[in-house]
Length: 68
Image (cartoon, rainbow, N blue to C red; front, side, top):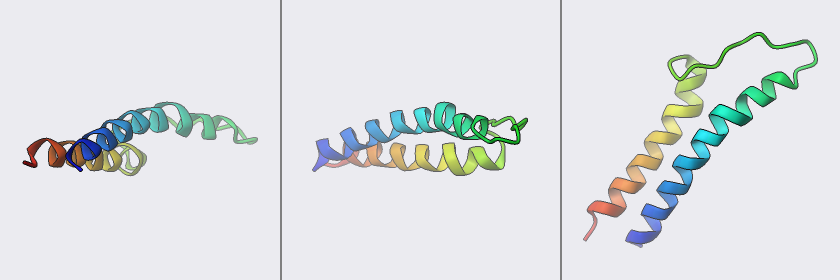
């Protein structure tokens, strides 16, 4: 279970970066009216789509690493 938590955390951390830096801007670019919005990690979108999943991933990695 310990190794599974670490692996899941690493996969979720990688998926978080792909989601926020590739998929979220791509969804905005596919808007037919044109999207001029910038997505930063310090915005409200960044909190919901970057920091919260990264916090969950970090928690899983710490849980798996600290568990005996």
